[in-house]
Image (cartoon, rainbow, N blue to C red; front, side, top):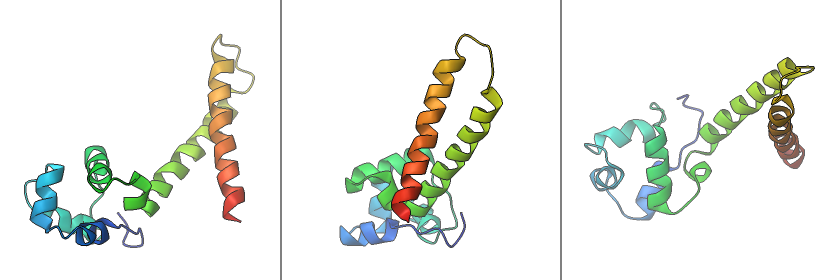
Length: 117
């Protein structure tokens, strides 16, 4: 994970007066030192850890790792656009169903970009 990707693990942990060891126990890690890399932005969280942290703090995943969340979402959106282009004119029976899903993803991306402006 790049050091410019903001994480709020330490912020939420301290807000709830938890030590690294206590939070590690709650989210299923072996020790608090495992959290250190996340708090310093040098480790990418696993899906189960993302879900665990969001659940413990009762916040959406994007509130704990906002920049990482955005990075992942942008990747999905870019791949959706590429797949959409590749499926244009495809005669398959399920092509319309796929295109509908991809159009929805692309529409959400466009809507999000408009709200950022």
